Length: 324
Image (cartoon, rainbow, N blue to C red; front, side, top):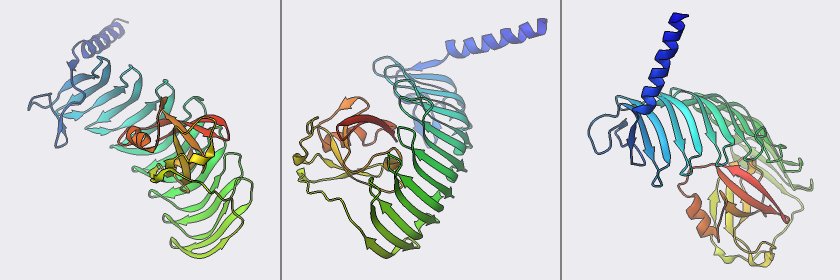
């Protein structure tokens, strides 16, 4: 009993010492030079517990270093105090169980790292519905390898395929948000190989193609749904996670007005398709921030860290998606 009390007392003293003597530095980042971290404004390697802070005084990160390399628990925070990421390092590389969080505190993703690379099961979750999966996949040595499934925001299956060495390999199927088949095809070593079929949301066949080693070898076009849209600011477009975005066409006469961007196309197998975006969607806000047009959208997302919470309008209804 006496020995147990001594052990508990020792652990308490260690935890207290770590918190009490953490080096509080009023910088946004611990300086990194040639792969090693240093004391701010110094040539001394970082050692021990450090805390960095946002300009408003809120904690930005809590991390531990041994001879200039991250080791042990790492936590990062938004400027409102919300935890963003928590995990552990070993000898400078991510190692162990990691979790990411949305701005509202909900779990965003979880995965295990080994020697700085993802290893094993990866899961990501809906922004508002905690138990609802958005993606379930398997990693090996840092690359997708094994079964892959992605889901729409309502829990319906969006994509099912298999990866090998980081590339899709084998049967691939994707579905519209209502469960209707969207694409059915096959990949080989990351390239389309064999029959390819694409369907509209109403079940009508759009086109049928044949591929060989990624090159189209045959094509049939069927009934199509047409658009005659006039863009309000020229043909300018950007690509975001596989979605082609433009300014909102002036002749849509949307109830919500012309603020936002228009999804003019969605790449098959992309992150945008995985979360359920389709041609014709209107993106109105990013992380609760409204914006005017394509230029504003680009500024808000370019170089930013995801996931991004998008407010999407479709057929007069609004829903949310989280996209990396």
